Length: 353
Image (cartoon, rainbow, N blue to C red; front, side):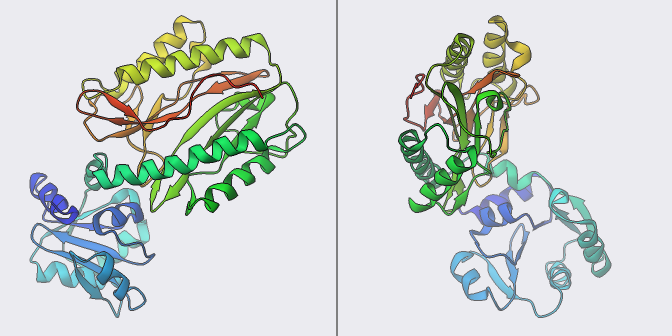
């Protein structure tokens, strides 16, 4: 089944006459179009990709399942004309991905009712195709190579930003098209900041360092976190490392299609709480990845849905001690029919450089 067919089936199942796809990530998913200007207007029977003369040839090659429309005037006027042609009364709008001015512009040129269809495409994206998993795996391979490289590169006296830049350039040199997010390099007391984006702080001997990073490869992301030491660190930091590692392994063991996001989050959270560090684990245990670095399904207290085969999620429990340091260990997991597959191969044992 093509992705266009999947969308059309979802439209029928949700009793939507049509949908206008405006999110850049959703647009890439439904059409495989990689340009920067275009919309997809999809009914239960037809699929139209609307772009301008700069991208028509590219759209014909990438969005080959669609009728390509080269709009000459305003793009929403073309959408309105297609809605009349297809005799639809309702257009599903991705409210999370359209501005008020765009909503007003479309409302001004069409008599169709605009209804919220946010989440329809995102729900389909949660279940990865084999080809998508392969691209995520390729991005992970680059990320793991970068981690091994940086262990041999990092030295006391370097700044966090210097290490982050080296990581970023290395991944691009290995084929990455971009970064999943701003690389986190947090050393010493800053490792207690879960999102401590690299700063000008100088890395010193006898410090804990957390590195959280990933890359894009052909549109799909990786996400990896490792915490390690340069020299000797405080015994409590070594203690919490082992607690986080065990929580990480417990999540990996429990992950599968027979558990909800909230239940899997509790596996890590309850264990860390039992060890006395519950208040020091403030973020969720994980999130979905794919075209975006954060997408559903989440591994959080707010997700009561069961995972399904071909979900790809992160496994990233952590403990953060203000003023001393923090630990996070993160791998990417593929949910299978019987459990999960760890897509990463790098060991998670404590490293002292």
